Length: 367
Ligand SMILES: *Cc1c(COP(=O)(O)O)cnc(C)c1O
Image (cartoon, rainbow, N blue to C red; front, side, top):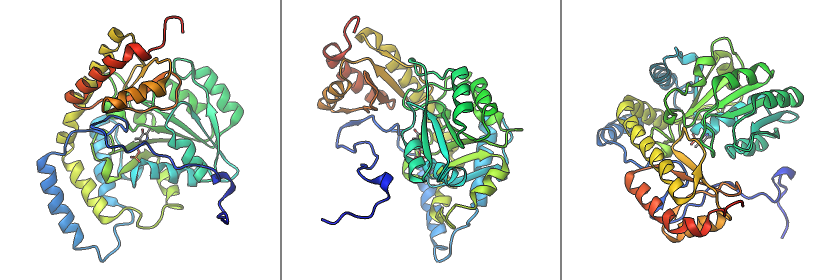
């Protein structure tokens, strides 16, 4: 068979994606398991029917109304004034990140992120032709600010990713560290806050650092706390000049009229949608509290998931849980697995299954 003339950096690669298996308890992709409120479903029907009447026309290329609604949401929940000119939206925050890399990364340029972190950051970087450098973390997965600053000064990346709360480890990064990283670089610093709504009390958003920092970007998504992963709506807040720069690479009409209408309708139901966040956080904390009795531990979590371990062989523990109809995520960190916090019933099922397998799979004393 003749080989396709793939770009060299794509040869031999396999496509990214968590297994989508038919399992009763799917706790592997950090979605919100709660069904959407009936009142929202009714309003979506009306709004989408209305928007459909205009489907013969291209959508609002600048998504002006949606960006105003997102700005209002950020201002209301963070207490930081964010205006529509500071907001940009796309099909999932993954597309937002891709547009950032197309604008500020690309051929001959370098992106850096502190691994282990969101695996899409290096993948989107290579997809846009940007080089990738792994930033370092301590063994407990926290960022050593002094070491990170030194690495940024040496590597001089064009785009820097900080995921806060971090995925897959769960812990938020403090604002002093983010401020220090910003000062240590002339690149664009992207704080990926996909899980911001789940943070423990006292954890502040990097939105408060935006004033006076024109190279700082905060990205958010409706896929996690809002429970709208199927909608594909991500967004960012930054200096208006960043939003203007992104216009150079965004495809015209990238956000369909249906997406814009559905997202605006969902934002009008923000309070109902986010009402499940406290319930999910309670389940997260219940998982964390149950682990020590099984001889297991976790990494402090500000997200809707828990990195738990340690196991002698994480892949074997993952398989044992799967055999008990519980699907968690093997994120490739030796000894650790990640579980999404959802409903009380899901926590019950997870803890029961884990109770059955923990003794056989946990890392032995002194191991
Ligand atoms: C889930 C996740 C996203 C969300 O991506 P979408 O494209 O908005 O669904 C972004 N960043 C991180 C770190 C995530 O875990």
